[in-house]
Image 1 (cartoon, rainbow, N blue to C red):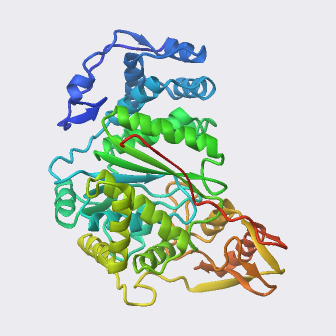
Image 2 (image 1 turned 30 degrees about the horizontal axis):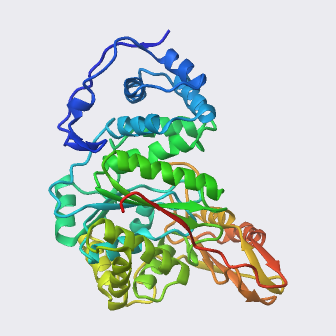
Image 3 (image 1 turned 90 degrees about the vertical axis):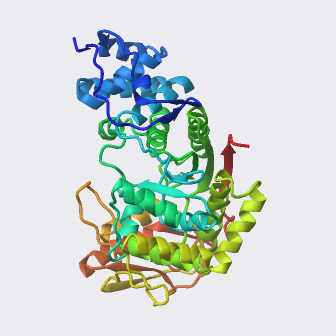
Length: 473
C-alpha cells in the first residue's frame, strides 16, 4: 500500500505570498504535515463523496509534485473528483497547495497594484495584446507570465513570438525592471511555476477528467496566484470555440474562481464572453498581432474592440486608477483614441527587443507565401460560423500544435472576410487561407465550407458579454 511518510520539502528562497487573506510564508504554509498519510485512503474518501481536509490535500499535492504518488493513483483520485466534485473549501485548499508547489513570484519590488488577465481560451482571442498596453497606459503595472498554445486555441506567447526578435524569456531582475519602467512585460511562464498542476493536468488530459469544474478552477487560479498579481481579470469563454460550451457551466466556473481568488486575498472579476464565432476576423499568430495593432489604431473589428475595452476597464479599476467602472471605461476609450495605448505597445515590444513597424502595411510581421481565397457557393445570410472548426483549420494550415513540441508557422492562419449576420452572394469571398504549404489549402477549404451555415433571413445577433461576476465592489 502506497504511503507517504512525514516529509518536509527543502525550503527555497520563496517570497511571502498571500493566502486566505493573510500574509504567510512558505515555511508556515507547509509546517503541518501528517504522519503516514495514506494516498489510497484519500482516494476512498473522495470516491465516497467525503470532504478532504486541508492537510490531506497538501500531502496529496506534495505526492503529485515529488513523484511519491504514482500516476494510477492520481488518475483514480481525479476520476473520483470528476464524479463527486469538491467543496469550495477543498477547491481553495487544492489551489493554494498547487500554487505553492513550485516557484512563487514576489512582485513587491514593482510599484503600484499589479493586475493580471487570463483567458480560458478561444479562437482568434488576441485581447491580451490590446488590454496589456491599454491598462499599462493608464498606469497599471502588468507583470504577465503566459503560455504557448496547444490545439486549436493559440497561445499568447506564440503571438508575441511572431514579432521578429521579440524575447519572451527574461531574468527576474530584468522582468521587474521593465515593469517598473514601461509598466508592462509579457514573458513565458517559469519552468517551475506550479509543477503539481503540470503533472496533474497531463494525467487529466489522458484520463477524460479535464472538464471538471473544481480541477479547472484550481488549475487556472493556482497559476494566477503563483504569478503574484493582486488583481485578476478572468475572461471565461463560452460557446463552440471555447472549452466551456454551456453558459451555466461557465458561470459556475467563473463564480468558483472569483471565490477562490477572494479567499486567497486577491481581487477578481470574471467576464463571460461569447465564443460562438471567432473573435475578430484573424485566426493565426502574426495575423492576430496585425489585427491587435489595427485595434490599437482604433480601426479594428467592433467585437474585438469592445471586449478589449471592457476587460481593460476592469483592469484599470482593479489597479485603482479609476474609482468606478464608468470612469475606467472612459479612460481606456480615451487612451485608445489618443494613440497612447499604441505607443505603450511599441514601448513594450522595443523593451523586449521586438522589431515592429506600425506604419508599414503588414507592420513588419511574417507573411505567408500563399493566400488562397474561399468563395461562397450560395446566397444568403450567414447564420452560424463554427469557431472550433475555424480554429482547427488554422491549425491544419500550420498555426497550431497537435503535440507540445510541434513547430508552428507564425504566418499561417485564416482571415475571415464575412461574419455572422453578413449577407453574401455566390462567389463572394468568405475567407482567405494563409499558408506556407499550398498543398494544405484544399482540405482547409473544405473545412471552411463546413464551418458556415446560411439562412434566408438575418439571424439573431450574438450578445458578446454574457455576464460579469465580481467580488471586489
